[in-house]
Amino acid sequence: MASEGLRLGVALDGAGWHPAAWREPSARPLELFTPAYWVGLVQRAEDAGVHFASFDDSFSLQSSSFVGADDRVDEIRGRLDALLVASRVAPATSRIGLLPTVTTTHTEPFHISKAVATLDHVSAGRAGWQPRISWRADEARLTGRRELPLVDTFDDPRVAEVTGALFAEASDVVEVVRRLWDSWEDDAEIRDVATDRFLDADKLHTIDFEGEWFSVRGPSITPRPPQGAPVVAALAHATVPYRFAAQSADLVFVTPVQSGEAQGILAAVREAERHVERSGEPLQVFADLVVFLDADEQAADRLARLDALGRPLSSDARIYTGSAESLADEIGALAALGYAGVRLRPGVVTDDLPRIADELVPLLRDRELLAPDGAPSLRAALGLPSTVPNRYAPALAV
Image (cartoon, rainbow, N blue to C red):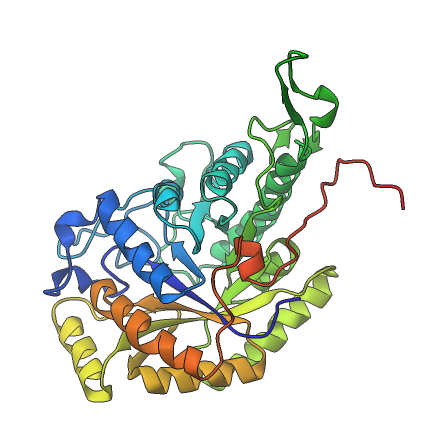
């Protein structure tokens, strides 16, 4: 069970979550695809005591349309691979958790398993990942392995049918990934030169998974991650993804747009846990907020000015404009409802991340709302059990 205190995350994507963020004077668009840019952002968050940073990703270019590509040239198009960015950032940081988004629909679970395990090794136990499904036809065409319906609107009933199947597939992906992490027992590596034994072959296991979408024999080629099971996160907005999170994740990011929705969403998540008969630790629920931090009027004016530059910001999550003090009040209210934490999406990362670090975090510390930072692993930082038993290891005699 998580210890007392909220956990704070930041969600990083390009120049920020506003489509015109790259045009701000503080933005550094020429550096967006450089390692120094990403290392600097995450180091800034780590120095402030933020518990984790997540990295957004998808198989397709960013778009103003939810159902397909567009032809705009006045917004950022293109991004680096989130998991590889996290792996580059890992050696340059020491405390902050790293949560890249990984598309499950077009990526083999074996590849996901070894990549996330590698991130956990190079970060010394600070890895997690956010599985994401891909239901768009244009993304399916990038690999050519399956056909998905071409739709004009998200309300098309075929979308609900497809996403339901893809979430079921994603649950199998997470299950296979976890089994592959366990396919090496913790002491499988002997590394004994005197006896010419690097491995104990009896402590490597095939997982022999047979499912509807794939079969995986195993074992992995990567030794078990330092955390045993790196953290699995999910973004959810409705019943089906809530159930996916309850079945497969350690924490879930939700998006209450109105303040009155926050309690109802918590209830919906708990109902999803009951529906799937979740055992073990309850889901940790984090509220996502897009933030523009400044004096109240100045923050609203900044958002309005950015909106006027091209496409106004629209978001699945609430868009907050205002002071750090008012935001701290709202975060405190979420804590009182039972939220485990918040994940903040900076509207303009070069303006709003420094304000999160310099203004908001000290306020939350002063109000004793934040859990301590500096835990030895991401699981520990989130208050999750630090020891995850290996399903293939023999049970110890009591």
